[in-house]
Image (tube, rainbow, N blue to C red; front, side, top):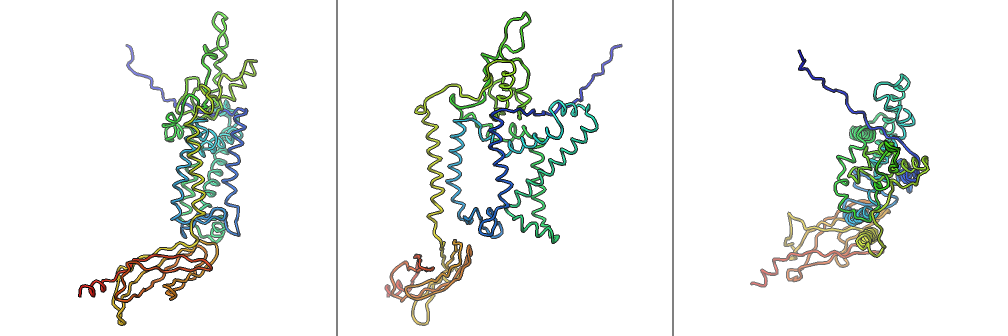
Length: 443
């Protein structure tokens, strides 16, 4: 009697294990990623005039960037920076494809670093796949455990470094030695460290394929002249070492190395795909195989579909010009910002009043922000009369309540006060209310 039972396959697919291949594109990727990693990890150790070179002080609302002091109101400067960055991204994407994704994106940089450590500790791709299949030796399993420890240490170092931009290392270490562990800082270290370990060690290509929005709209910025990784199907097909009857086939021997080295686990021979980050690892691998077989390189190449002259690419240069203008504007705006930021507002509780000396008095609050790197003394004048004085440390803010008196027949709707600091001065216009003049005029 035939059985109706079915066999259900429970074997999960093996994880994609990336094979690292030497080549010129890998050298270029190293030339970009290693300086970026060095900048990220070393910057918190740098100092500027005795202070951290980069310190984003959330508590004091001050942002120290290599001697450049910014405040929350300066965040408007980010507008031209963001506009310039967008146009720069359009320019790079139209000219060189996903160059940012393949060489500079933190996800890519950390992923390749984790893969490099994985290969150094666990061994070749085949050794790692055997371990995935449960065929590894005890020593290989021990190495995998060591790999996780090293990954965790790198993720922890990444988290502490990221936190140090907001919580200087010297202050953090001094607090730790005293047993003063900040709950907020500890929480952020755990969050950033866990995400680094998860993204670079486990998710990897899934972040680029399913989470990154750039892969979804990259095609809008591409054209036929954009440099991308391409497979020459006319030269490579049909694939194989030789035909059934000994006839000649294409140059592609179907070795599969181009898939093995791909960090996003795609087959570039299937055409351009949104998961391709243009890292050109498959180009290095294929060129190496072609050289071994004494065949011309370039079966997989980083090149445009067609070549045009520079004059024909007016949209590309338009993006470049727009990015340049935005960045110049972003650099110029801080230079035009005043050293002393002044604002004023009327006293809402007592906007005006009649004094015993038959004058009308208006009350204001004058707020001053010292944007200099040195202490200043600010004096507020109404004509030659001093109304108030403030001593402000570098970056400090202060306020002064002032009262301005005018005769009952004073007709102007504005008064001017003078704010002097050192040999510089600024004039602030204040709206003056005198309802008594209208009453006298009606009588």
